[in-house]
Image (cartoon, rainbow over all chains, first blue to last red; front, side, top):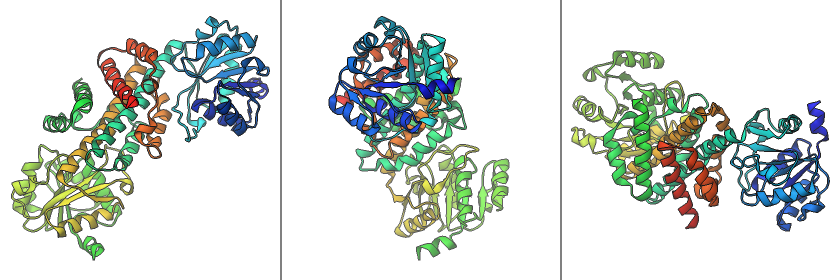
Length: 263
Length: 263
């Protein structure tokens, strides 16, 4: 029953950015070729549609009928796109893919049936994503909607979860720490090394091991380094070697680690 | 010539912690079984020696002759251990494995020939390390010492580099950002999720992808997220959802990312 729902689901994609592209590639690989792709930009829409072998348009009103419309546009653009989609589609399930936008954006735009399809992953141009390893968090306005989204999501991954808008907000915050801020730490490391003519590549085995560790240990158990050891001499020496935001972050994060070790 | 140096090198290990254990296991796997293991703790020394099939002692003066003595003890304990080793060994090459301890700790302890053998990796109990992926940074008091260390290090990895004590200090600072602070970001994410009954495991695909990305893109190119997009509404909403050090770190790191995007 659920599988047949997905087999027959006609999917339309609104958006042609990094997330839309990765998602469409994964859907096609799972046998779900979108009915059409919409984007404000003709170039983006035609490029993605050509990749998928499906029609494209820059006019929402000319989009074909669909069971599920997945919107992957910027948070800023979403309210406007949502209004146009709600006007075009009567009973299709209208969903967005944004971590921090509540589901309520849809009824506010006049949609009847709506939801959220949030893949917890970072999407960059030129780096394809293995969706089978990605968790997808779904929310819907009704139980049928939940089942439509779960069925579609399960074509891509076994890791499908229901989450409220409030939970998804916290998932997004946690993702910012786990991904965006982690990358910022890599960036500061690269700057520290670059200032001394040392290659960032030297960090890669360490970076991989640090990520691998938390598959087996909790982040609390995996913590190492001078702050975890309470090595005040090294902390002071490092701080003196840094300046500006590097020193501020070094101080704040070391203090956090030190306090945690004492708990 | 270099290989024969390593073939014949008699290695003694001072220390039996996480780094010493990982290093000894890798040396044994490469055919270099230590002549003996020393530790202050009889239990630690005997446990590691049993694993390696070599003698152990808690008395530095009773250690056997060696060509290279590798010290992997805490930074605090190093000066004392270094003095005792310098007294025991005349012309053996005495080296330590600490990122932030300058090579000068050895002449200060009275050593004649000395150096540093710094593997850039994080070592935890119960998690064995693939040394072939680890960069090892060496420093020595003389050219023969450099060649002895390079030859030994190349038994473990192709990634062997010379680095001065000053450069190694910056490598260590960068490692703190790339590893210890990255883990602290994981920890904060876990806390944010734990407070809402959400599982940290949901972050693992994101964590892996974030680490994998910087193998192909520079950390500057790989930066994503609300601060990189300049999405002030989400930044304010996230900040309001956090408190204490989570909010402080969120503000400081987001500001860093925002400023970088404008450069």
